[in-house]
Length: 102
Image (cartoon, rainbow, N blue to C red):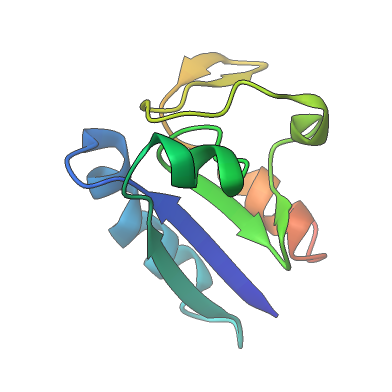
């Protein structure tokens, strides 16, 4: 099962999150694929909701993300039960991987 990290160069949230995501999946057999989004056209074509975007087998880890259409070149804001943040909560990644919460 591949995990994709979509980002654009210079987004501080993505730069901060890469080591965290690598550590999160280090004990699994999942493979991380990092994909840089270069421009607005690619952002729309990729349904890019902002940097960083995490997908498991092509599906965004954010619950309800499939209904969103605000694609573009921006740093992403994740709205969680604990407030807004620039990276997805670990539990969303675990759920998307089918591993529950750790």
